[in-house]
Image 1 (cartoon, one colour):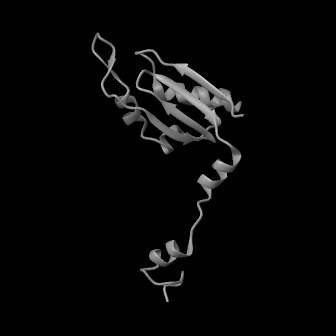
Image 2 (tube, helix red, strand yellow):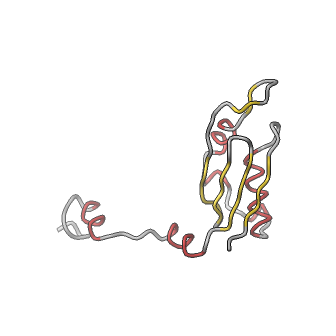
Image 3 (spheres, one colour):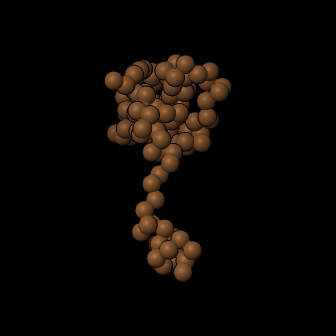
Length: 118
């Protein structure tokens, strides 16, 4: 069973900070030792996507965002809920080491049948 932590970010809160903080706690890793979140997602776009409007505090967009960060599956919901679940080790390995089929190699070599392009 995977470990999961969920936090709710207030309308004045920083979504990206909540993601890094929650991943840090779940993985027992100092936040400064984590890969910068900006190498995985555009942090300005994340903050803009989940920013609230004026005095009503409503979110501008009806959207959720999911991505993988530091071996965790992260989901940010439009209500400010941030859920972080440790990804299974197999899925982490597969995402970092994608499988390449012979057909992929052939098309990457200009449509020819082998990796050398012959």
